[in-house]
Image 1 (cartoon, helix red, strand yellow):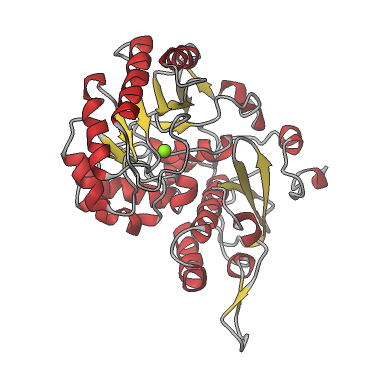
Image 2 (cartoon, rainbow, N blue to C red):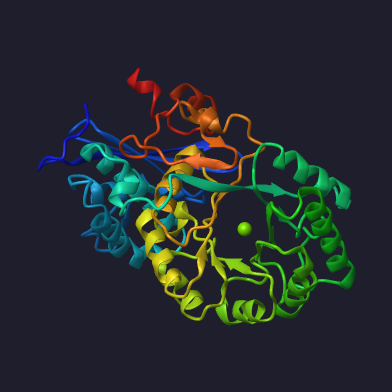
Length: 399
Ligand code: MG
């Protein structure tokens, strides 16, 4: 029985494994002396899973060996924010303020919230301030049509809409513009083709289904503005990452030059990474990825900062159901939230990774769980079927 909110509770071990889905889904597990276990998910990346087991030192005179385990074991898991900060301050001097470390922290933080919720017998959203909504709107990432032919885009849009989604996203930079384009240029004929593809999708789904378009940081500022202007008649929900995200002044120039709303942020790390973007109002919508940006509380802080400028939040998400449900808990607590991404429409077993997963997404929404912690039960048998080769089996050993 959970519900131990007592004085003493200690982390005894931390592990990570990975599932091979349409991305690598890195699952984090934290164990305690109370027998309660927390589960989280870290965004994929080279060395992310290995970081949970690796050690690093301060140099030749090895007085201090830092590792995720060393930093966390013996700590009270309910000090979620302090432990996230402890990982950041202990390790960022060696491994940097972005990338792998922040992916790791995000998964750890998620698992700590799961543990804390279970220990206190409350769902995570209550620990984050309570909810604005009972169900979370998700939008389906459709990728693209089967070919360049706009008709195939219309067919893909109809197929996904028929599954109950009320919001879709397509990638106009694929498949025809996949090649390396180091000068970031878009030709007139490429823009024309993109416009035809978007027009076909819009006609297929009607005006009431929201439609976002992604460019994956491909284009130069001028051509991005041309594209955004050319897409204005289709009343997009947003145009995502039209220019690279490193330069918020260039992003702002695009945002200020078009009526098409501009969205960015999936590649930014921590609230510090979002600061310039938000205070300069360089985008209309921000898209932090909860499993990558630093976790649930970090996302809430970014949302709060965005809300000062009436900027909306539409989190990026390519997670398994574990990271997706964690995202739902924080999305429930964000006033300026609009929708959460769902990126596994072509993975038929995605929902089976958790028990009752077949009911997870209904008519384009996920109900926010009311059970303690994340409020989900892992489907161990299904997870074990899809473990990445060489990944540790955290579940079978207990049977
Ligand atoms: Mg994107």
